Amino acid sequence: MFTRLKQSLVIWLIKKIQKYGPHKVCISGKTYEISENVFNPRHYFTSRFMAKHIMVTSKDTVLDMGTGSGIQAITSGHAGSKVIAVDINPEAVMFAQKNVKANGLEYTVSVLEGDLFTSLDPQHKFSVILFSPPYLEGKPETYFDMALYDSDKELVSRFFRDAKEYLCPGGYVQMIYSSLAGTEQAVSIAEQSGWDHSIMARARTFTEEFIIYRLTLRQSNHHDH
Ligand SMILES: C[S@@+](CC[C@H](N)C(=O)[O-])C[C@H]1O[C@@H](n2cnc3c(N)ncnc32)[C@H](O)[C@@H]1O
Image 1 (cartoon, rainbow, N blue to C red):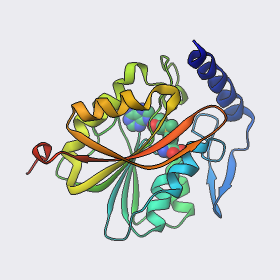
Image 2: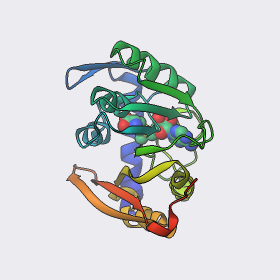
Image 3: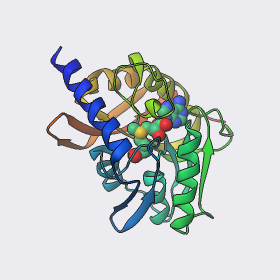
Image 4: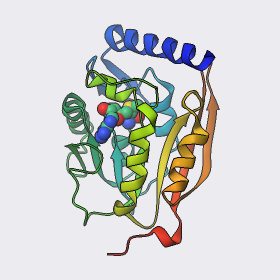
């Protein structure tokens, strides 16, 4: 009951910030432009916290799943990695492309529209997959709602079922999740799909605790092609 109340408060706050918050924001010296329909990377703790813990190098090929403004893709691009970013929201794709270009990364970071892995070539494998999923309970009615709601963890389930096809041997998923939505349930879904996890970082805010997980495939679950 208390969690429901907190979730409603968080949703109310997010929608106000999206509508009235600045649509051009600066994070670690980089500027990101967004619209009210694209997840604002400045005003939610998750975006900056996740970006701070990206540990990729020029040797990595990175997939940024659910890119929004493009912040995680751009952070990885600045570290020298080759990146593909995906989002289901066409307006997010447009702004992410714009932000990639403004950062001079258009030759190493590509942005595609798609529902999870559907727009990707299964031959293409990644050493790191970044995932900052929506986690609140509710039914998405607009594109922006898709940044917030994942009813019954349907998206998380599909992600962990399909991600194994796209990971290089030895690669990992970096996922951020919230105590407000049940971190234990999310990792148990991953476990059932054949993933092991460890904690990379955790932080508490006034509404919830965020945990960044590193997930790797159990040996028997690797798909060799
Ligand atoms: C919580 S936001 C995170 C945005 C960004 N990664 C960040 O750190 O600021 C989640 C993003 O996932 C996208 N998304 C939701 N469902 C998706 C799906 N089925 N396939 C691809 N992207 C999806 C949303 O449109 C949204 O941009």
